[in-house]
Structures are given as structure tokens and as C-alpha cells.
Image (cartoon, rainbow, N blue to C red):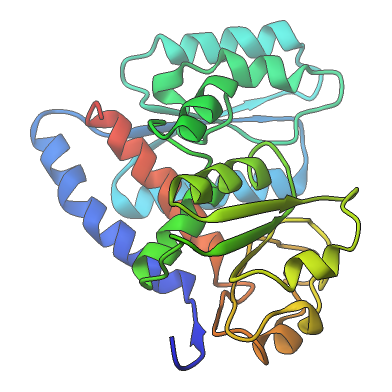
Amino acid sequence: MSEKVILDGNVVANAVKEELKSRIDALKTKGITPCLATILVGEDPSSATYVRMKGNACAKLGIDSKKIHLDKETTTEQLLETIQSLNEDSNVHGILLQHPVPDHIDERKAFETIAIDKDVDGVTSLGYGQTALGFGKYPSCTPAAILKIMEHYGIDASGKHAVVVGRSPILGKPVSALLLNEDATVTTCHSRTKNLAEHVKQADIVVAAVGKPNFIQGDWIKPGAVILDAGYNKGNVGDVDYEACLANASAITPVPGGVGPVTISMLLKHTVDSAEGK
């Protein structure tokens, strides 16, 4: 890339959704309507907003959304029973348990109860393992979005040095695995990494997934590097100091309007994939 490219997530998301329309229509001619079930436990306002956004995105494409809102006093066992009933419902093709759940609930146990064929959000350990080995059906949606943005804009990871800042189980770790599967050389950094700036300075591709506003500094960026900012912090701020990093980057995702819209589109895609039996 010889000139700076703003990696517009809305453009990528719209391309994904446009491609899904004909597939959804084809399923409906067979009497199948893709259906995503969302489970919200408690009254967290941010979580409620995210669930509503996902429901709206489904509605715009003609995907059914089944919303289950459980009381904050719901026990782990009650949540597991709810998930199991959705596993057994043939009209439900994807299950999303909105994170976080109340502290008294065993969230990992709940995630693991989701059937692998309906794990469209990529939260089970089985799904993660299959993704890492290169044959997972549904990678975690934000890592899948990052790879989709790279594909859309013709950014080839092969032979490149990718530095991922963050190691969460649904973002940092799986995106490291996906980039490794694309033949990148991957360094995964985290809160215990020493000389973090020096690692980032070596990167051809930087993935920011640390959850700290404006954390990645402009003088950490090697000239010509590609930056994918998966952070979203209070005030619509990413994990990257955008203006400072833009000076050195060849391509960068904005926040908002970068990785976020594509993440939701990948959730819709995985739900349609599941409805098709892929």
C-alpha cells in the first residue's frame, strides 16, 4: 500500500450483509428462517444495548432473533437449563450469551454448555481449539471481523510480523491463532510483557485488543504498519492513539466505524452458516 487507507468497517460490514441477503432468501424458500437466540442475565445497561443492537441487525436482514432476559438472581443451573433448551430447539441456529453475567454465575460453565454447532459467537473451548487448529466453523466474532477487514482490503498476513496486544480468550488469543493460520509470525503481548513498545515497533500488523483508551502510541508504530484497533472505550475511543498512529501507519481502522460493525456482521454470517448446516 503506497497511500494511507482508512479501513472502513461499515463498508466491509455492508458487503458481508449484502452477500447474506440472497442466502437468507434461499433458506426461506426451504422453510428455514435463520434464528439467533440472545440471553441477557441481569440489568447491565451496556449489555442490554448490545443485545438490542444485535436484534436490530437481525431484523434488518430478515433473521429471527429470540430474546431471553433472565433475572439477575438467576442461578448457574437455571441458566444452563435455558441454554440446553435452546440447544434442543431446531428452530434456533445460533446462541449468544451476553457477557458479562452476574458474578455468582459460572460464566465459563455456561459458555461450555452451548452446543458447538450453535456457538456462533465462538465462546466455547472446543470452538477455540478447532479455530486454532484451522477447522473451526465459527471463530470469535471480533477476531473473525479483523480477518474479514484484512481480506476485504487485500492485506496479506503471510510472512508478516503481527503483534497482538491483548490475550483475552475471545479476542487476543483467537486472533493470534487466526493470524498464525494465515502464515503470519505472531507475537502476543500482554500486561506482563516487558518493553512492550519495542515489540510493537517491530510489527508489520498491529492488533490492539487491550481495553485501554489511547494505549498504543504513535512513536511505537513502524512506518507502513497496518493497525487494527479492536478496542472500544468510554467516549468512543479505541485502544490506539488514532491521530498519532495515523502518521506512521499505511492503513488503520477508526473507532467507531472500524472493527465493531464487522463484528456484528460476522455474528449474522455465522448464524446463517449454521442455518445452512455449514
